[in-house]
Length: 227
Image 1 (cartoon, rainbow, N blue to C red):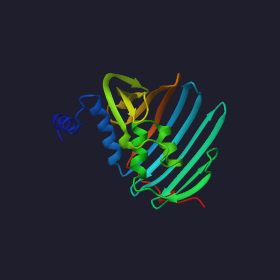
Image 2 (cartoon, rainbow, N blue to C red):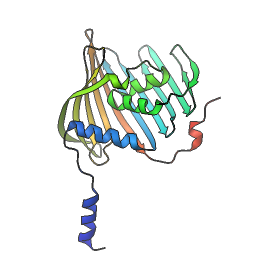
Image 3 (tube, helix red, strand yellow):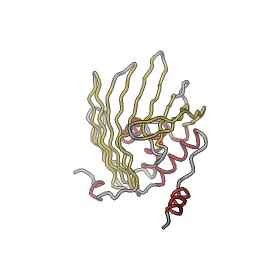
Image 4 (cartoon, helix red, strand yellow):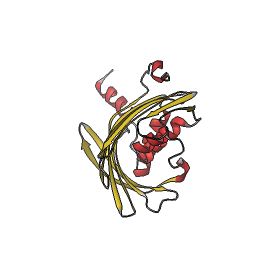
């Protein structure tokens, strides 16, 4: 193939850049929800009214198969959560939450609900919903508004588009203030900050998406339920 023809081909297959902040978010969300498998590794830091360090590793596959491990450590807590679904049953094992180890029927919307909460609100909301079903707001009770498109910024080796939005939760008087960095080449999340305020308290969440991998081959044993 001639050089100019090769360059033209590369240019033609490049995806169009989203236009505004909401379009950037929808492009990211659509790419993740369309994947057959998703692996996300994230680190979380909380400052303000509470100080906390946490991490989460999540693997999802079609058929509501899922495995998640999460840990959080603060001045008065040291939690470890594990959740596995084989698509039919879900086993949740927690250290400091009241229910301990439980087994339940896997919800029909387990993966879609988990991913929607993670992308729209925050990593820990997905963790809490997986370990304590129905403890978090329903997806339909979340409204994303006040979209703002910022500058692009280098984050490590990645160039990221910054967007901002408010996440309004039904029943809560104050929305979450979210700022999200999206990779301009892969359209996958790079990091996010969230400001949660209310009752005279303020919590500042900082999430770093260390790994976001789509459509990789996953060993079926990954989703085997623990004995």
